[in-house]
Length: 261
Image 1 (cartoon, rainbow, N blue to C red):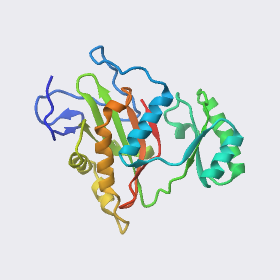
Image 2: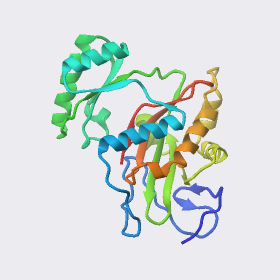
Image 3: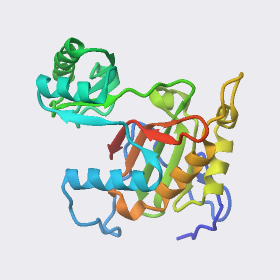
């Protein structure tokens, strides 16, 4: 197969330089390409072990995780919310439902104990209506969105090309906008900066727009580069971080939602 020269970008799923081999990577919803027999999967690990491993990778990349706790009952959820501090976000945990917001399994701005109980009941009904199985409710610190922006980072493992990373405008608009850049891993920080330049409007948003403060571009480049260099510690099914919130300069990034492929 073709070998990648450092810095060769991928645009629109095709190699720009070198051989004209097509790379067809999915945009979200996240559906990593299947592995072939030529790619040996790593030893099977429990889901909890994989999740713990990803948390360590994110911490090493300088990405903060919001305070959160998985709860199995309304009483646990209320206690968690009080410990984290109101307002909080309540998210239903249901592996069959990748887009929980779309089915009503996410409640934002939960402001008191009564609202926590109402949110848990609402999420339970929403998951059941959508045909999912509720594994608990995640009570999470609510991240103030202003003046931050939301991005998405995805890593997939292709049987021919190996690990590849996507950077895109994030949140619920990621699929509608389709603004994304792809690279083969691993990446240096300067290569992440070239991805930013490919995504229309992102450079301007990070630099400060209409009087808003500049955002932490350096922390974003560092985090994405380190994630791309840690693919050996990630599950071969892939990882999606959406949204990855970029905060004002000096405040870093926060991975609000992390999903295994």
